[in-house]
Length: 116
Image 1: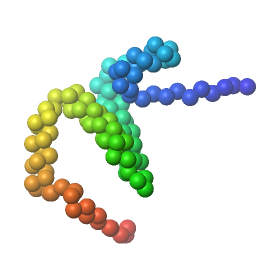
Image 2 (image 1 turned 120 degrees about the vertical axis):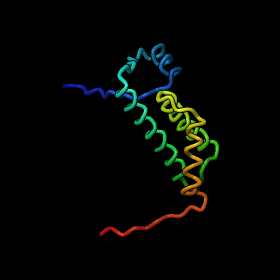
Image 3 (image 1 turned 180 degrees about the vertical axis):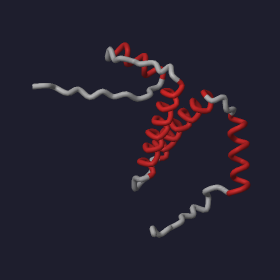
């Protein structure tokens, strides 16, 4: 009988990588190709955004948990921003420009479109 062992490949925080090496003897693969790093960061951003969505989808949103999940999203966004030499000022400038042109999400409008 063959035993199938699942392999999990995901981007993890630096300190966690060191803990995994020490505690579990896990294999840590360092990404060196820009395309691989971009892909891993993109996947991590989606993973963290899904966790925010999951927290928002509960009947009683835990403010503490939501802040924690948003911090994770921000951490990944910062890593992406830094990797691509985008300053926080540049990002804020574009955010403000888009807000001026298109507005924000404070009115909570939803659009319903029929499928043709």
